[in-house]
Image (tube, rainbow, N blue to C red):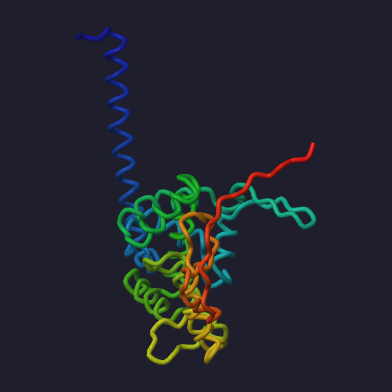
Length: 279
């Protein structure tokens, strides 16, 4: 179907303008890539999956000296990826992002985080878990912040992506805290430090050091433990009691009760008599 003369002219003008912009954008991308290849820090950041020349160059330029940040929280506060706080007295209220830092850097981290979550298995697991727990918006911000912390660590230590992953796995095996490091499959608490002072002792021949039965055996061992086991054998939960309460089994007529050691006498069932109510 042919277009009207003015509509066909407008379409041709827009197509020519689109081709002109595409050529200019391609030239700018090449110049950015050349600048990123000349910088050592940007070359290190390019080794991370999902990070292109623009996020790598912007991260190195906007962060400056990475040693000026004490920890990852200071970095997130500088970029503006921390929640606002409206607290008064003993009540704490947290709002949305503060957005006090560079908006371009936050945007680039968000875009790079979406690509990195598809290519990096650890970020992908982290994103899926946050997606179920918090939703799409908070999961995207959490991945962007985690990716930014990773890039900051790589700049601070002057390491590549593979060395970064190797250090993360080493810290996981040593049970040390590793903010921003790759996680394990066991959840967010798997890389937290272990308090060996409160760790339960390991029993002989047992591989589970957190078994409460071992502690109970040590605290109430000997004859007390034997008596408890005997009483536990005499107690059962009946189907009539669905609340979970335990009821002692009744001894049969003429049998010796194991708890008291006495012989129970046979009981005769008699027909109930009618009660006369005085007038």
